[in-house]
Length: 99
Image: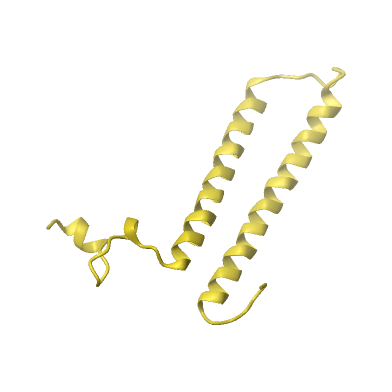
């Protein structure tokens, strides 16, 4: 048995990939959502850097509002995920925060 498999094995012999406790599903969901937000933010950043729309263009207002609204939306998504994570942690600790 390798050192890596010993590090990621629980006392009952199950690995982290086989872990079916309730908290693990929520951790995977929150982690997956954060990774998706990072990927979306990187793609949008590259798209905005790849195109150049001048300020005199008829689409400049749309681009400006999309950039400001998009930043606000991603910020609210991250804050929402942090609140969700706090709710999961509080419920795991025995409290009833949020539900």
